[in-house]
Image 1 (cartoon, rainbow, N blue to C red):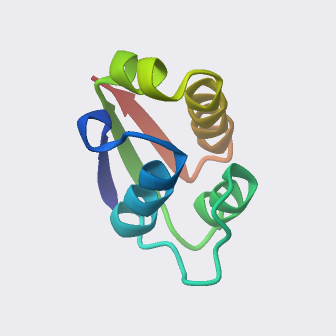
Image 2 (cartoon, helix red, strand yellow):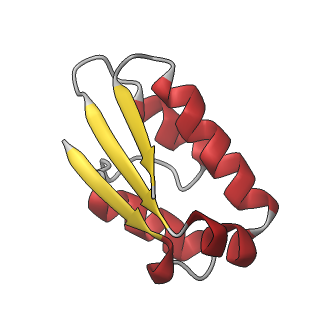
Length: 87
């Protein structure tokens, strides 16, 4: 599965999680927190390529939460089931 997370569409934590739910086809019972997203991303049954666009805008809008989100993506990439591209 390929997904693009475009920070131009993100204004706060809620819009980030709404976009993640849509783009990553997260299950309805997935909590709106980074730990829950990590658990879904590292599911061995699904490989994903995630492109993050406008990372600097994401940092500007979400501050520390953006850093935690990007770190979570890097950690998920370590599982071997996620590849993260930054543009």
